[in-house]
Image 1 (cartoon, rainbow over the protein chains, first blue to last red):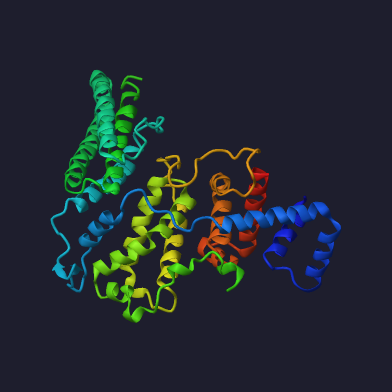
Image 2 (tube, rainbow over the protein chains, first blue to last red; image 1 turned 30 degrees about the horizontal axis):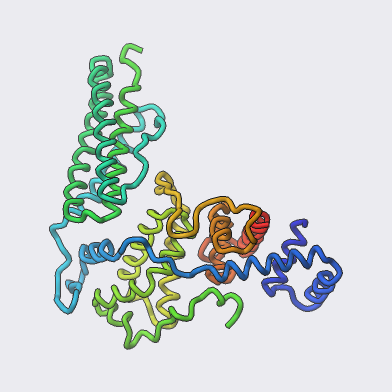
Length: 223
Length: 187
């Protein structure tokens, strides 16, 4: 069926054909068995689509993350969030703001200081899945430790051959990321179920491995 | 009720603001907002999951949607049902996210919340929910978004066009494309 006829068929189904155009199309449906079959099939499809469940419950309760974020919010007029009738000020001592700031620093500094000294990004390391459970988080940490250990060893072997200013940038960036990892892990200790923190940790690990991968592939100073 | 409203669930209709959970939430009552969350999370999550095909992203977007709703709760005037307001906020959030590249790295195949993510076989009866969900998940992003918003959620073309920042002619073309692809996949 050509696009124009298919479009007309859909407009008819959606009640968008009017007057003589509608009448003529209905007559055509009567004359054309194939068109009628297509109309019936489309109608079935739309009926089934509209009957799909409108709600799907998430596998885990997402409220705790929302509640934490609400508690972190501050009302500029000085009012407080009430839980169960008790007045509670949004928590000022949470590690969350530092973790988010740390992630922002990673993004900004690596973008601003790193890209003009490094080669295009190598393939992404295998740490790509956002850990959802404690076991997965431990697995990500183990993968990171293994990758980081190997790459750090390789970088150490190449240290004397790399340009000094480049090495300085690499080590500065690694320091930024390592500080961020510390802050994020502190936040995770306070909010272990928070998916954003888990995602930030994964991203920080991925960035560190990425920096190390690129650093070990840098050409020697003499080349 | 018009055809475009068929997708809206009557059970989610909320009474006017004045003496409801939304009014209490507007007064700063987070427990009332939690009740709103419990009432509407299923619909919000289903929308996020269908649009993104990514369980982790859907969970993040669901939380973000409710957090934004909390922060903007005073902008809810009560001239529509809270469910409608919440749903539109979620749609805008998801569409904005889909336009961004920030979360394209983490892809987790959706196999749990919807039917198994498998190519529908020709031996299955067309129109089965499982086949449709899987086929919808395989649509190109824009076509999928328009199909979900129009044929599942019940938005009009002018509403979808406004939310997606495209012309109604484009939303119609995308819808027709989606329907044709689904017809071929489910034939």
